[in-house]
Image 1 (spheres, one colour):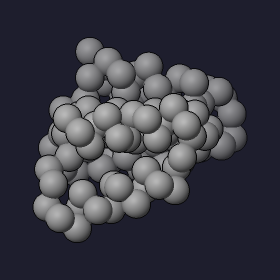
Image 2 (image 1 turned 90 degrees about the vertical axis):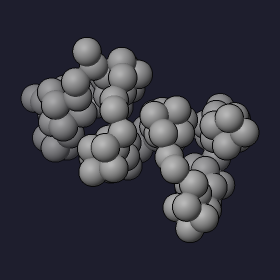
Image 3 (image 1 turned 180 degrees about the horizontal axis):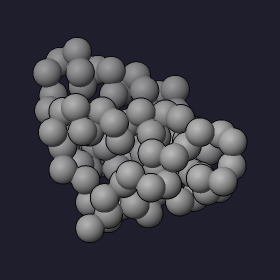
Image 4 (image 1 turned 30 degrees about the horizontal axis):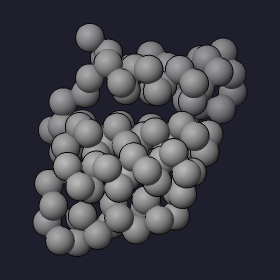
Length: 99
């Protein structure tokens, strides 16, 4: 819970660099990342409008077998202006299972 709280504060303060250091620390120290950790990191991406990193996190969730919830569906829309745009963010727009 402490790490989730730290990541949440970093998201509110738009501190992507520090959040990434915490994220890497978790990986380096064998801390299992759960849906709440991922949601907090996706929140940082949303606030920084970094849709590429958010999509990477959603793909990482798939690779690590972390179940998605409705929050990922919520975050995918502010990050992306739609599949008609040429930025290539179709994963976040159409492939996120929010149900």
